Image 1: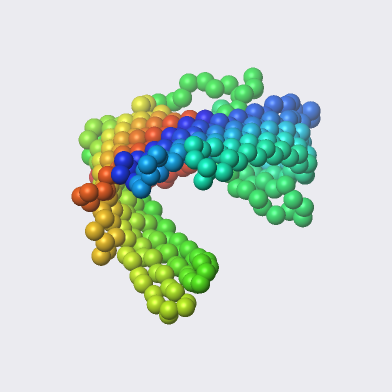
Image 2: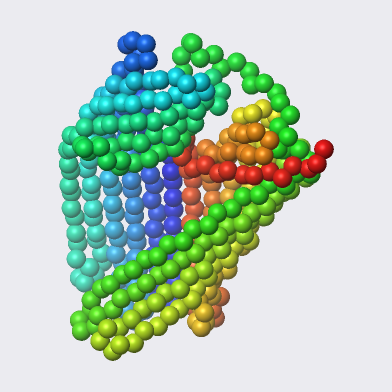
Length: 371
């Protein structure tokens, strides 16, 4: 997995802040079967994160105050393990155990051009050794590709620390890939409709003290993302998605016994074009989308809008006659937003590029045209 992300926020009247960073990751497993269904291997995982922030305070200063923060972290984990497989075609179950050794180092540095900005530098490193336990299942989409769901932990007694999904590519002379068989893929016929969407809700409570005030706040958010598309021709979809977020912020002052409630919302309109590239059960796809976003607070004069564009490249699996399971292998996106308030000069942008076998899956339901 490789991920690059760059953020920026700027206001020429009050302050200017720019942020960017990148993330790199690698996970490699190698080994051999020492007996039937017994696998002895070694996993090497590494990750690196870099973030840099430059803040410049302009308002009320004869000379702008500039502060720069830099953070860099690197971690390497090696895990020798043994794994046992059980085959129940087309499903494969496995459990494994091993020993995990992780070494990490973090560097933090803060500098500035003003005596009010205190220079800061900190370096830290650590070494951790822990047991490693795993259990999972593979569902083979082809002879080479499998959809994997696994749970792992580094503590005893067993307590699940992480659940992962992703694609696994198998090598070996006994797993001949062979050509994918051509099929009709009735899901992608011209005239069909495809629907998707999701719903989530979260509640966040905070309390904090500021002498002599005591305050608390509650944030509730509700997210819905309906989407529909129409196959304008075989394998090609033209559709629209309308993600929405609604919520309210409640804050109270325990000393003055006062409270307030603010309602906020964000609505996006995102047309997209998606194309499936082959008439096989497992097929690559591309998806190009653009979006306009509008957000605001009830009772406040500040409004915001933004535009974005994105490109996804991934794999789709045709399940039965009604479902399509998709995972993105590469994504590039750019978001630019500004407030809709006169006299307030503020801009923000977000550019992102990510590539890798990840556990991000979407399930789409197809309304087929009557024969």
